[in-house]
Figure (cartoon, helix red, strand yellow):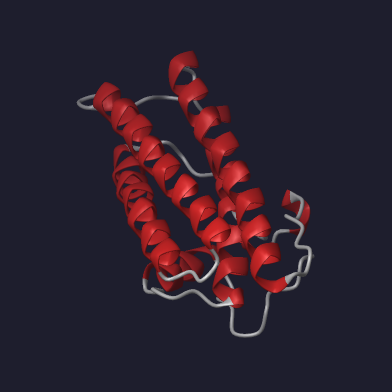
Length: 168
């Protein structure tokens, strides 16, 4: 199991809440974000696995792939800032996936994710603006732009579900 840094939130929900309040990230915050982004890949894959609609499944899988790209980008940011290599853990070693059940695709979950992904763009932009390393800041901005595309994909899925429930 990947060891959480001292002071890091112990679970995924607390990690999301914590990151939302960070304006100038520490190495611990950046490490937490790397783990959260990697966990996002599994979450989107789980949602896709439970969905019968091939188009919706593809949109979810696309967002999941992007989340893993973000995790690797965050590992690169960490290395740029610390000069220490960081590796994104496998799912089985990610502490934010431990004991987690599979989510069900629902309108309330989509509403939550739409907001979280849109907020991710703002968060990454804020972090980039406060980052002393321009290359690291550029990587954060790139991930931020992609977070907004996730929000738009989720809105598309939600619009398709409005008035009806998607059954797995």
